[in-house]
Image (cartoon, rainbow, N blue to C red; front, top):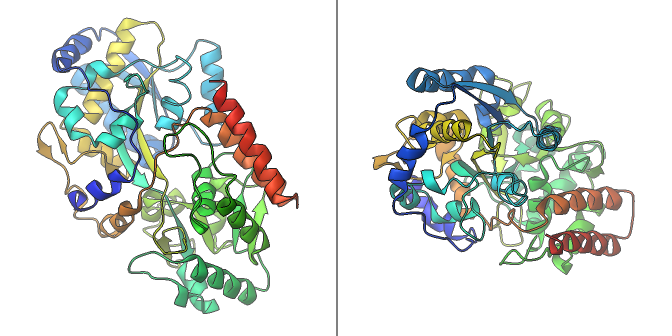
Amino acid sequence: MFKKFTSAALACITALSLTACSSGAAAATASATSKASASSITLWTYPIGQWGDEASVKKLTDAFTADTGISVTVEYLTYKDGDDKVNTALSANQAPDLIMEGPERLVANWGAKGYMVDLSDIMDSTSSKEIYSSVLSACQNDKGAVYEYPLVMTAHCMAVNVDAFKAAGADQYLDLKTHTWTTENFTKAMAAMASYYGGETVGTVYCAGQGGDQGTRALVNNLYGGEFTNTDHTSYTWDSDANIKALTALYNMGGIKFDSSLVGGDEISLFYNETLKVAFCWNIAQQLDPNAAGTGTGKTINGQEIAFMSFPSETGTSKLAGGIWGFGVFDNKDESRTAAAKQFITWMANSSHTEDAVKTAKYFPVRDSVQGTDISKMWSDNETMQEYSVLMQYLGDYYQVTKGWASARTAWWNMLQEIGTGADIKTTVTKYNTQANDAAAKE
C-alpha cells in the first residue's frame, strides 16, 4: 500500500540538498552504542499519537530497558507550553537526553542554535537508503548534520461533522470517496451551514498561539493556490495576492470566526463536543481516536460521524502540510548519556522494534523496510489507515525548515489575531511577512 503513494507523495516534498551519510556508519553505530555506560536517560516527548500516553510508552521503554539495562524517565509535553519548558531547560543546562518531535524544532530551531547532537554516526548505509530521501533531507541541516532520526510521517488535513452537514444539506458538497473538495464547494458548504445554524460559528481560524498552526497555514495557502515560502526555503511568501485573497474570503465568510482565544487543541475539543462543525487541525491520529478520548474511530462525543477531508483548493487538488516525527539528542556534554540515547534511537527506529514504535505513534512509517524487513503492509489490517492513505499523494513542500521558522510562526498567529480585529488585511499581512523575513535574515 505504501509503495503506491510514497513515490508520488514524497516527490512533492521539496528536498534540501542531501549529503551522503558515512559509508562506515555501521561500524560507527557499534562504537557509539558500546560506549553506552549510562544506566539511565531522560526522554521528553510531545503528544505524537500514543507517544503522549504514559501506558503505551511504558510498554516500549520497559522492553528497551529489559534489552539494554538502560532505564528511561519520560516527561510528556503539550504543544501549549512544551516549547517553553524545553527552552527553559536549555537555558538552565538541564535539557533531557532525548526529545521526540519534528524537524521544525529539532533541525530549524534547536539544531540551528547548536543544541543538538549530529546523529550521522548511527545512520548506517542501509537506513540512509531505506528512509525516504526527502524525509531524511528534512531531518538534517544544509551541511549534512542529522539532528533528527525520523520514525513516522503523515499528511495533516481538516475534518467535518458529517451528520451536521447532512442536517444542513451541505453534504452535497463533500466527496467522501476522494476526501477532496473545491474552494467553490467549500464556500457553498459554509454558506449552507451558516444559514442552517443561524449564524453560529461553524469553524474557527484559531490564533491564540502556534499550536496547530499547520492547519491555518494549509487552509489559507490552498484556497487560492498561495505558498508559505519560496521553493528553496530562503524567504517567506505568504504576502502574495493569493493568500491575501484567501484571508479576505475567510474573514468575510459566514460561519467562520477568527478566534484569538483558541489554539488547535482547543478547536479539536470544540469540534469533538459538536460545538464546531469543521476542524482545521486534524490528521490520522485524530481520526483514529478523536480527542484521544478512547471512544472509537471517527466519532464525536455523541457518536456523530467525522470525515477527514483535504483542504479545499480551486482545482480540488491540494498541497497538504506534512508532519515528520522522530528523535533528537541534546548535547549535554556527557558522552555516556549521549551514547545511551543513540542506542535508544537505534532500538526504536532501526530494529525489529520499529514497527511497535511506529504503531504507537499511529502514523505512517518513513520507510518501507527496516534493515531489509518489509514493513510497508504494517497497517493493512486497519481500514481507517488504508482509507486515509488517499491523502498522502497530496503531501506538499516541507517548508518548516526555512530559516527564522520560530519567529515566522509567531508572526503568523499574531497576524491572524490582528486580522480578526478588523485591521486592513493587505497591510497587516505585509507587515508580518516582512517581520518573518527580517528574522530569517538574521540567522
